[in-house]
Amino acid sequence: MTFATLNIDWAEKYKSAKHYKKVEQLLDEQEFDFLVLTEAINLNLSSFNYKYFSDQIPANTIYESLNYTDYLKGETAYRTIIYSKIPCVKRFNVNDDKTSLALEFETYLGNIVIYATIIGTQYKKQPFAKKELENCIEDCEKIFALNQNLIIVGDLNTSFQENEKQYSINSETTELLKDLFESCNLVNTTDKLEKNIDHIIMPKHFQTNLIGNKVFVEKGILSDHKGVVITLE
Figure 1 (tube, rainbow, N blue to C red):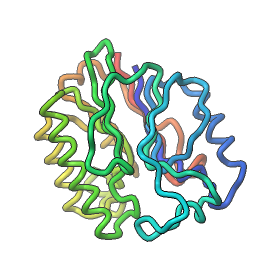
Figure 2 (cartoon, helix red, strand yellow; figure 1 turned 180 degrees about the horizontal axis):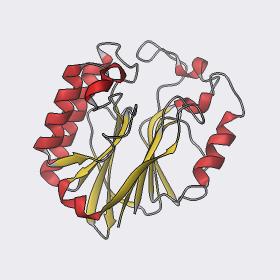
Figure 3 (cartoon, rainbow, N blue to C red; figure 1 turned 30 degrees about the vertical axis):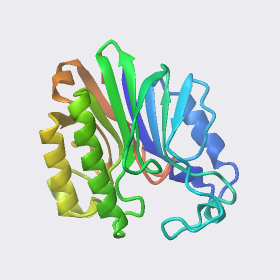
């Protein structure tokens, strides 16, 4: 079973009318069971049976200091989308349903919850980054109390390597995320990937199922982020 994530940078709709086709083609060539896209638009990915959206960013208005409709030349913006080969069985309430999405799926590992999110929708700009961190922590603690098979996936704008602090929002964000993972008995499967800020964090009790992780697309090919994937047996 594979879990992947990529920030597609709105498929560069702000400067290209056709780049999204390249994004669709490359993603459709992959063999993922679950794919979380952040800074997303509604892509047609034929390899998935289901897709689930966070609430769309309000159209034709200034939302958190940006008119996304103008910026994306009329495209509808979604901060998170989960693509899946199986249907979800439950949706959880989250503090910010335009930024985060939490769905439960029935799998051979048991019922898992994928919490898809962005921390730092405008990177270091405040108060957004701090509030998104607080929302993530509160959401995950509540979900973990209900289902300990919690998998956090998305753009955390944080490298967890000591020599890569320049790729993180700030040290407080990094440490609070580490505390969250520990309190929810989670392990970051992608923290050793170099210059990587998008992550997949899974329960420690799934570690024996982890076959490997890798970058499936490098920065600069589809977007300004790396795409990462993990495989569980």
